[in-house]
Image 1 (cartoon, each protein chain N blue to C red):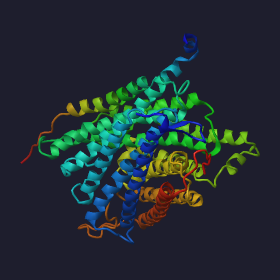
Image 2: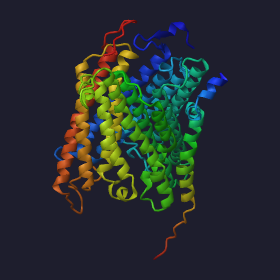
Image 3: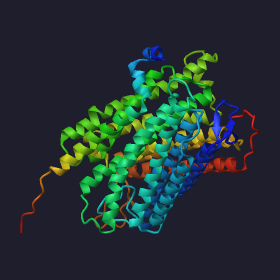
Image 4: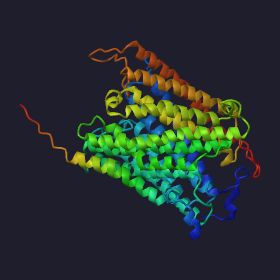
Length: 511
Length: 52
């Protein structure tokens, strides 16, 4: 498929970059940005509807747009970006050609067609079933077809990643073990295969049910298997995000892991145990035994939590060691104060780590216990939890990485470095306010997925403590700030990718 | 080559074996979460509706 003409040598890393891998990374990453734009517009409308002072959308449009927000952000934006990341982590980091590039294009087309079908179904009101599409809520059969096509495409993408690892090993393009980032992405791909398989197991019978070939679909069984996709897909994000943290630490301060054995062991803990987390969604189901719940959410799951804690300590440590080697040894924190805070990558990594750990992680572990799950699961506090992990954590890390991929892989000069850096701060502030607002209102009982928390049209009137409205307002303002940061991200990325100055073949300019 | 392999610890050999990690990553959640859960649902007694 490839010949010598298809290869260039990266002037920064010295690694070979095959043209077909570069093109596939480009198309998947650009498509991801398109979907974050759609999801971001939906985020704005949803946040402005939850805010009682504005209450923008009608109930019908609110649930339609909320479904679209969930799918475009949680699945399309992140999975397209992750597929780009998998091709980068295998072909580029291993100095190798990509296995089966034509199949990779086919996978991309499947994912794109699937995503477009899903969005059309949602926006035309034929699939207002929320992200979970719990049965007996029934969407148009095409909606399920769209999800299945997307999942199959992503599964093929994972297979190509593993294929590329095999090609690189067979052709000896690297020595010893694969780099830590590639190892982390391998963990993400393994988690992804199980996740997408769960998606296939549940969406195929749901599709058959939607066209009438199956009469009954057990709602409890649906929930069990669906969350193997729904929650585990967020575990792919966690694992990919941690890999991106290691990459950003290298790109921004030249950090190298202090102890790779520890870091790799933590990734292995993810592979073994993180996919047991979906059980959190079933904690209030009386059918499942306490043993099933405890084994999956406590005994085993905490080993994955341990892995996150290892990464959360290891990554700042690698940055500190790298900075101290540069001579920033004064006091305890000179290494931190002299860090490149004026570049987008470093603050993106640090804020992502803090938001993921302190807002997303701590809430996740506590809400994942049976007692707190009963109290919090259907409140807005849960929404605050996963906006801390997926938005503050994963999305912010991916945004930070984008600014380095543009010159490194797309060979374009970044337009508006100051805007890119400001965007990271704006987005982090916005998400912090958003998650605190959601968490506060939810803890006081404000429900998730609710069109009108003032219950203005309710037959039996009810009003929350005014503090709920205060927290809801904080969340809405945070949402507005985050959407502004997201818009700047899309603007800088699109302008740079399409209109940024083309870098000369030997130009070793990163930012 | 054989000498080189002797120097590599068993843990590292396991970590370098993506197929083994893949297998473990499939089996553990499938058994502990999916199959165990499906068995519990399948064995739940069917509710009987009584009353007027």
